[in-house]
Image (tube, protein in one colour):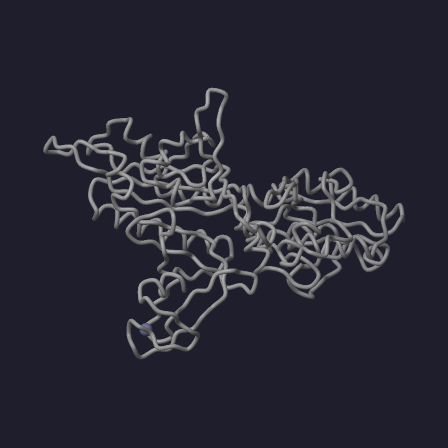
Length: 424
Ligand SMILES: [Zn+2]
């Protein structure tokens, strides 16, 4: 891709009220634009990253045996009323009315809808487990959206649902999703700490939040330095019915000290037991012919929030430092200066990349070299090739890496080998 042709470029200046690093860098780097408070457009560069996040998550869900589906954004309000979720979500929920005065909730999550969907198939014990997931827009009318993609009013979420015939099966599968979340986090180069959390408005028996340590996070998790038990602060204080402070004694082992960590809630898994199936009368026919309520779990990851969390944990003062498997392109190629010799070699290197199927962002703009180098750091592609009169004088092209100071001038014929060894 020629950068001159890309829609949505880097910005020199961004509004002063943009505070979090991920928000600043994603806007400045040309990955996202705010449309209105808490609602963002994902531009082409951002979309390439978002697509990679979706593919990593989707592949892991399919590996578990989950099948991808699509469901409507507008949920009949009656579905939400069956478990009083309309009350529990309260002002966070968007409600719209059609021309026949039928009311709909804009999906904030989809347990009720999925439960109805499974119920309508009249499943028998032979049909389980039922494992389904979707990627769809979710709506939460946050009072105070903040921090770019970290807390928004509308966002793409992967929500997965599992349905089972016994509590033991649910527990076994919950653990599989839990383990899958740890593997997904690893693929995204995120260090996560799963903590026992409160189920809030979503409801259920027990659940975990997957926290990523970050000064930009708005949640605190608490971990015992001795027995390693970990909770969200909210959950711990609710369970123990008292306030806690950093350094307090662990209520579980009573010997360790509690450490508070500021963090971003990246993912959330819920064991929902029969919280939905009983009020929805969502049953299956068991081996003995009896109708019994389903057991179910739900598992969410926000896609935009994942992008923001990766940027929060992968940047320096010059820009983003994408992990290898999330970078929008494998290579950032830049030509510096107006020399014909430089542009000829750059065109040749660019077409070689295209021919062998290497994704490349080629900054072919006729702008000041300093600006091109700054944009290269800002956009944050890990493997870079710079072509200048100086590099040609030194024997070819300059290969450098976003996450270290190392750079080498090598003949253009060696780029492919360096690239292969970098990406394997
Ligand atoms: Zn402890």
